[in-house]
Each structure stands twice: as structure tokens, then as C-alpha cells.
Length: 179
Image (cartoon, rainbow, N blue to C red; front, side, top):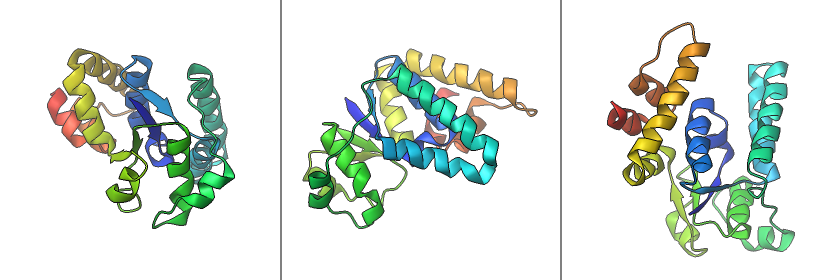
């Protein structure tokens, strides 16, 4: 399955690390556009100038790890498509150009199912998507989440449980399942 990952899913570190871990294991093929990656980098500015530099380094590493993931929609496709929020059309266009099956986003209201279905796409939220990944490969997903938890505990002054970490990462149902 090819999945376009929206910036709002790439930017939270824990969510991204879990999803990219699953992609690295071959559970799905990730896609994004240069504009989506740029939105991620710019979203980090509120954390300070060094955060953007760090994000750009992570983006470069991600691009090197998944060299076929980047999709650039053409202008004709961008003009043909419509969404309630015009600022999200580039996401839909990248998904269509990349021949994706789904758009992974937290933004449900701006990606109506009927409009996505017209393009043979569906919207998935990260928590529900990860539950499906867990159904397909429970040991793989558990191992990836354990690695992310271990890294979070290494970097954080406070200890995390898998349930608390996944809840903070906006994947509470996955956290419950992993307990």
C-alpha cells in the first residue's frame, strides 16, 4: 500500500518514528512532496531556530532512506482538484500523482471521503492506520514501538510508558493495544 504522509503526521517526532519504522519494515510505502517536507521544517520554527536546522537534517536523512518517496504533482493536477481548504490541495495532488492508496493525516474535515474516493483514495488517521498495521504484523509493530519508547526514555528526563507515549503522540488506541 502506498500512503502519502501529510506534514501534520511527519512533524510530531514519536508519530513519525513509529510510522517510518513501519515503512522501513515494508509494511507500507511512504510518499510525500517537497512542499509537505517544507511545511514540516517551517512548523518547527516555533521551537527555535535550531529546531528548523535539526528538522532539515532529519528531512535529508528521510529522503536518503526513501529516495522514491518524493512526489511532485504538476500544475494541471493542482488546478483540477478541489478541497474545502485550498491550502491542502497540494497534499491531494501529491497523493494522486504518486498513485497512492491513502492520505495519512490528522486533518479529517479538510479531506472529505467523497472527494478522495473520486480519486481512488481514502483518508486514514495515524492511530487507526497503526492499529491496522498492528493487526497485520503485531510483533513488528511492537518491536518498532519498543525501540521508539527506549529512545524517548533515553532522551527524556521523565520515564515514559508505552501507553503514555502513544497517547502524547496522538495514537492512544495503539498505546492501549501495546500494553
